[in-house]
Image 1 (spheres, rainbow over the protein chains, first blue to last red):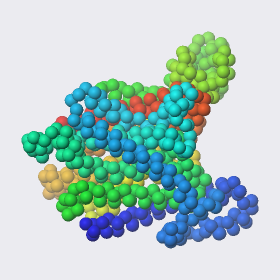
Image 2 (cartoon, helix red, strand yellow):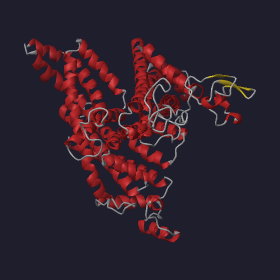
Image 3 (tube, rainbow over the protein chains, first blue to last red):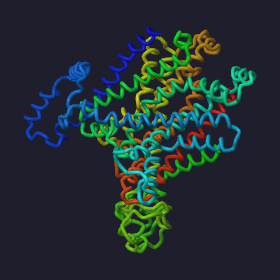
Length: 311
Length: 317
């Protein structure tokens, strides 16, 4: 087990390097110059050249990447080219917001998906269950940003009901719509997994054995079928986590939440390389960590994997 | 169900292909100033520059209206002085889906938006599937280091959130053209096809008929093109069908962020941006409702067709 984790961690290093190097190259090779785009742009070509030397922008790309990596190891993400604020501070204020919104969305989605999935599997012959299953298929084809705009239209403007605020993230009421909209596609996807997982489990021998022992149908469902259906779900969830994070880019824009998504969006617009790289690093870390967590969780859930039986 | 879905897709394709004729400020045919013009919306003759249905109608001897007699960029504010208040105007007999906040016909913009969205979606799927097939076949057939590299690439690329990568690349292009968007999206969407192709090639390569072909002295290329690719195309084809829907969602997401084909040409995502902006004009619900329905209809239709293909292939296998 320990060795397996060590191997996984070792494999993460080159992956991390590839992701950050690619982003670094793309961000820096992009046309446009942060010094000319910033508002207090230095007037003369001379000052621009000086600023370029000071910021190290005149060095070769590889050298700059290595310098950046060296600073990263020491926990230094650099300073924004646009407003000279430390990148760590910017991410420090943006990250909690995104984590709050996407964390709540993920939690909500899991709860709803498990409850709904089990219910649908247990009652799969009922007409309403089929209707809900069909509705979930429909839901997966509907973009979440449209849902977000429609939700604002219905619940946050005088045309509908003004239950929720239109923009920002100041109180609990501000969270309702963004969380619901971000959870939407995840609910649609996860419920289908739970549904089919539980239904498959219900057809297997161990469930028949449990029923034969005279256990109640409810006990069979929640203590025998559901845990087995949840094992693959853990992996799915781990691999899906970065996508929830990514989905928050659009959601943050719709709801005006100053999180990682908006930070990245604005930094890309102003060619603020250090900020772009900071966000990319966090995204890469989130991606790799959730991959690792997915592996570990499925090992914990299914000891056969840890012994290397399937690898 | 499948028929309805296929019909929806075909309808959108027709609308997209003939958008210039179906929704245009120029009529389908007109006789004016002693000259007859057929389908002027295609050639855009200089003599009719700046003309619209409204300016031509009083002077023309006869005129065949376009089904939607407004161009996607034409503002109708000056044409309709009888209306109270400033746009956006709600749906009525003249503008079936209403107008936006500067008085452009939503239906016309939706039809022209279909062109961009569908062109991008189909272009992306064709290109990314081709790329995936090549990479997947290479990995499955060659094995060894090549397989290891491509497999790692697939693993990383499938978990790293695409939209973030896309934001960086598209922003790097500044004002991306339609084909640049297609290229960039395709560069991130080849994973599924590659994964399937790799698995299929590995499965097929061990089968007797491939061994037999090898024993008969068939070259590697012959085996690949004649025996492996055609047999692996079914699962790849099914996944490509689903990929059209995903590409539509991705393109509209990008254009919602303002990172796709730049304005003034309409895209569905950009129409939704307008809806978002006009939330301050409370209640312009038609701006948000119809583009969303259009996106959903295409995505759901491709999913239905994909499921139907899947069932058919599974039944035969």
